[in-house]
Length: 220
Length: 219
Image (cartoon, rainbow over all chains, first blue to last red; front, side, top):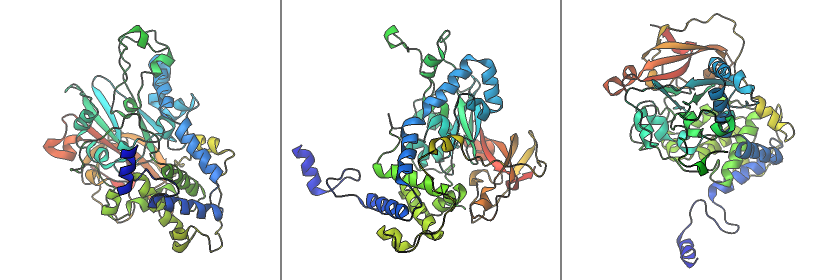
């Protein structure tokens, strides 16, 4: 405690302020919200609802359901790869940032990787809001010129014989990767399969979780 | 525009830094900026292309040294001022001294989730046949517009192949400035990594972009 306190005597971290003291950016944001509210352009209750929607409801669990369904249902998989938006809507999933979905399938020959070099386009309804690294210059700069190097940053090494296709999201089409189904998952329920699907495996920077090594870790 | 946002292929930014168990927002103010940007876009005072155009118009040094939601905040303030919804002085003080301007609609809490789960499609009906078909060889034009465009620099002047005809969509280059939606055919174009990056390109690798018809010539 006293150590922490001593730090504060000498300066402040950006995101760690005490009492009524707020950072310049916080003050600026409060001023703007106060102004826009006073003018009647925004309703703070609607802002709260938007935040709740994208912080707690919309997220990669939705995309994982899509992937798991495609793994167990070949007809669904065909619809998903043929015209993704209505196929995803079959599961009640869709909306802002996913109006025009394209699903690309990983195979032993082809690995897909999704990026937006120009900004931060990302399939919100299936994956939620993008992580910081997806929006930051290192990923946006390097995914298109050195995809294997980027995968190495995520601890993923592909066979040299696997070719990489990088999808740069430069328009309103939004891409989601359909990863390969892990081996030895025959008989898994859709729910158990969905638990293997990571967010990064649907961006292409990761792979689905492998098979648990002990029965205690088996998904339920 | 050839701004700092057009990052594809740039060197020197270092490795990607994944963050385990990353929160959706990293500070309370980021939540408010995100929601204000969504809600102000909903008023119809501007559109998503206009927001992108404003963000990428930040001076390159400022763009690259601002965090993601700082960029959103700066652009939002600029758009509010540029559309006359508030004055610069009002934005700085947070106090309204001028009458509010009418806006087309205000986002309400009721029905919000259904509205956002329905989405805001930017596809439009075709009024002309597509110029290109799957398999066609195309050249990305060597254009350098000073305004908003969605053709990244790294493909300009490069030869690719149409791999999908995506449909007809609002054209960002004009829609950003509210000079017309100009619905335009959109194509997915695949380039070989070696066409883009020469010998350093990943062997067998492809990079695709979604390119509007005016960005492409037959090749």
